[in-house]
Image 1 (cartoon, one colour):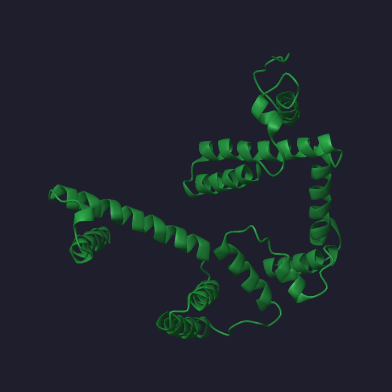
Image 2 (tube, rainbow, N blue to C red):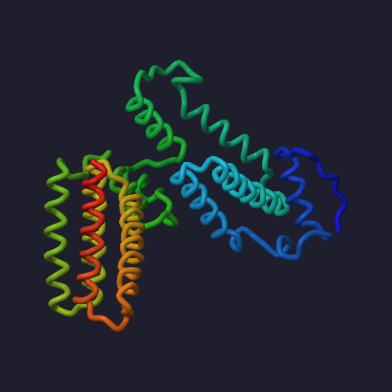
Amino acid sequence: MVEYTQKPRYGIEDLQEIVKLLRSPGGCPWDKEQDHHSIRNDFLEEAYEVAEAIDLDDTALLREELGDVLLQVVFHSTLAEEDGAFVFDDVCDEICKKLIVRHPHVFGDVKAEDTDTVLKNWDAIKKETKGQETYADTLESVAKSLPALARAQKVGKRAARAGMDFETAKDAFDCIRAERAELQAAMAAGDAAMMEEELGDLLFSCVNTARHLGIDAEQALTRATNKFIKRFAATESAVAADGKSMPDMTIAELDVYWNGVKERERHAGDQKK
């Protein structure tokens, strides 16, 4: 047990102290065993939970999840301090300097009357400060740990800055048709490696189309997945109501129930209009 005086309200300094106490000899066995790699996925999960709180418009949950993310930042900073690499204040110092450098229209004498100009300046400054000499460098710098759809969309956006892009959404959509045909050919040939490659190309083409339509591909797929789960649950309930079991039915029989769910959704949507 460690000595600590509890308070009615805490600040960032308290969080730093608590994490250090958890890592101390009298602290928590689990916390003392962790390193940057062991809690890497925890950071990702907490970030996604923040995103979910935003999607739900739940401010109480957002406050809680932001705290969990902040804990991850402080925890990693504490680990770095123990290794003699950097401290939490260094993290704060670096992001403050970055914001000042990348906003010369606020903290300097650069003129930027609209968002487009701001973003162009931001990209140019970022490229210079990160030592990116080519457009390929900017593509390589997109984090490989991003979800595949999000990474593909960001890579496509950066490639477009170099002029490597479709002129219209229709052109991007036409590429989907071409990639679909190539996947069909690979399937007909029974070539597993080629099927994987062509499927990847097809997915990348779908992401490019989403980008040209102003749609976030990651969010679109998330919503489609959520819709599938909702329809699946409704289908399962309808099947059970008839005294049947889904695994005992053919796909053709299940499709009847599935299409019934879709029809009820459409009818309910029409009634709301």
